[in-house]
Length: 635
Image 1 (cartoon, helix red, strand yellow):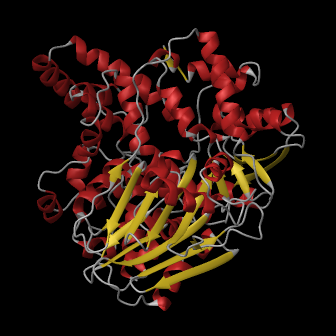
Image 2: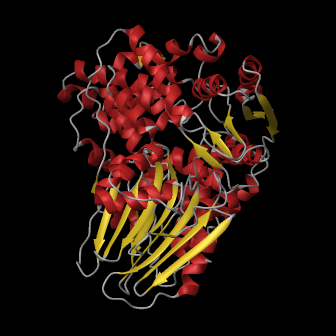
Image 3: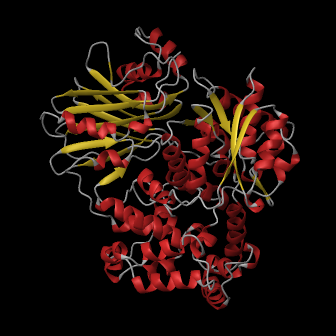
């Protein structure tokens, strides 16, 4: 069997007529994504349409070239991703009388379109972003996978062209792309640390949201993305705990198994956490050969999980590779700005880049443990949020807001203390409604800090808009009464695609590495969402049923120790080796000339942080990454 694998796609479509497409421009848009698919490149042009494709070959390396044409020549496809159920879909289509000339998933999508039209996307199980041109119908159709593993950017240009690509940099090649910054995206960025879908940093460029499709008919005028999938958090699974635990392992193993198909070296990220260790345990049980695993270690024992990764590697006799990352690995800052194309402030992008670099030395495809925290309530903040929401329900709003607002204002700030002693943050959160409270707990820069950071001009342009509206937009479309399930849903819609999956996609594609994510199999996600909340978070234990079901496979030290994650010593960097760089970047001409910030307040922040008076490391990092974006954007 053949799959197309990880790639980069681009396109230019004339919305109004059939003007010739500039093939040189299309080629340059395609080639700037060379890193996504270094094995092959292809272009298709015809009056009014151009498609481009870069390919990273994974299975049956000799065929599956794109853009791919239907046998009658009327349909063209450019596609990035993996459809894991394509063999079953192929059999279904053959039973309908369709004939295939290849054995790859690309042709299954192509013929699926001919058989089922836009409903073909409902049948696909996998990660994907694709564009189909149907010449007979004069229709361009785009779709993105349900959870947002693969990216898709698009823009309508003043000259009547519609352009799209896997990365924003492909669209920026086009000379007619307006680059006006979106004030609300700047507010979102400094609130969340990333720009949630469907916005980008530019007013005229959008991301197609996960689980959405977009159909454009030439000459029709307006077009609007349409949702084809959403996750439902209503409880439908009421079996016993033991039965649910058994079923979870069975479904998890199957999601891992269908992602192990490849004709190139395959392995797994192994951090030593529950999710990646669980993936490796399942892989080991499904493979005759030792599983290739890799992890990175940190010199600081407070952040080093490598000994736990080694425990799992030893237990399952994996071919394990580990490398230590320099704690002063800050030389990637400008590289990250180039990789992400727009402001992106998750500092764990640095070690993620390194672990992808390490993995590529050994394999071309890796399985990762991403998605477990969002689906099974693994983040500590879920525990705090449910506690705070109980407090909100106990105190009438008329009393709660002024009382806890006063306590929040009066209580001294203690950034240095463990969360249980940072009552100021808890009081401030309880004073707000549930969505505002959750936003307060996840925001990189608080409402007050953003207000102090922004210039009067930017505040005026915002017209009162606040980043919490991102949460409100998603919350109003669903009926989820349980506070824990609601914030899990919000994270699946925002943090997962906007931060986690963006980080992994860009870091892996920079090294021509494909990452597959079993815990984001949409059938598994739907099933996990149907479980009652206390099977996910029980008292203080997140991922409760997952950990219980993995007890026969993993040692207790892996399952029940505190969560760590990738940590980066920003505080020390900004007082030490990056002290001058911070001052030069944040107090220099680029930021001042942008007109977006209160430079006096930024100077005060930098001074207070570097003197040890306050810890502004997360805020300074978000400003550093924004400054790097501004410099790149001027080029």
